[in-house]
Image (tube, rainbow, N blue to C red; front, side, top):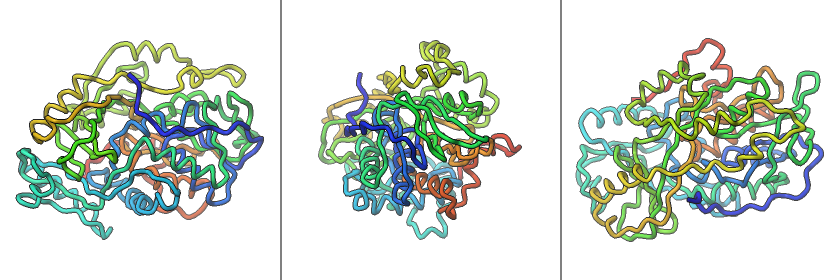
Length: 443
């Protein structure tokens, strides 16, 4: 079953000999970083082993939200929302962005109180977010029969089209002078006098002074070949989209049993609100202790599976030389098989809550791998042990909406500008400096 239909970006034919920065990974994080750097006059090469936005950047729900985030991400997401509001004009392209609000349903008093407490994280941001119930909630959910105490409603939240956003940002970066190199895997980094001096791609070498790894679920593998231990695992989520349907809610809605977003074409993206699949792989054992606090917090939402993915990953080399093909050249796109049972359950729950969806037709299903860190907070950071090497990854399912903000912060770090927000919580060294690394719910 093919993944989503992503706007195609044709890569450049010629490999530049030298640039200031090589960005590895053509998802929304890499594309946003490349755009920010190019707009600042940096010579940039964006290298993608497959096609722009082909993996999780086009497979996510398409939510652009500040609500219910880890409090450590709130300042950066506030900046991202400001960027999204003017992004289409800046790019000269359509990302499908619309500020339409997001609702988090609260089934009982405990959940209602928890979400009300979370709202305090937005104090001082001049950003409306409030608890609603009764007629106000009914008005936002026309035709709904969902039985809840109320909902956290954040009108400032919005949505965009994952199949359009990363390609639009990448094309704008090219217009600003960046080289876009698709089907051009980076095999590894080169150093001189201990500092970054270039990268080796499958098409040849590019000299550079800085590298940004925005490789999503592939970042751990890439780092390992350079002797860097990035604790990262993958979680699989399944999504379906419907054909256009009139009469459904305009605001996105999360509930335990389903989550929905109205799409630009009039259809809906539908997924489970809490179910994710975790494939047990060799590195599950390596990082089990580090991920234990996260597992305890999210245990009820995870389905563990042992099967073919374990043997797929055990066959992938963890070390290779620059003169041989890397694993990235044999695995251009992660396109896992969606869970029909999971998406069927979500769709059934949706139809029970909104009878209008009994008329909806399923147009497509897909799945994607979310790259997660032990504290569910991304790494947006320089790597001290290799000057000039930077990582922007581990967004733990929150990367699409925050992507433009993450790109700006990463560009600040690379160029030495004052950072748009304090990057302390995103530092790579937190995994080795004795810090307590664990998720924070904000409730």
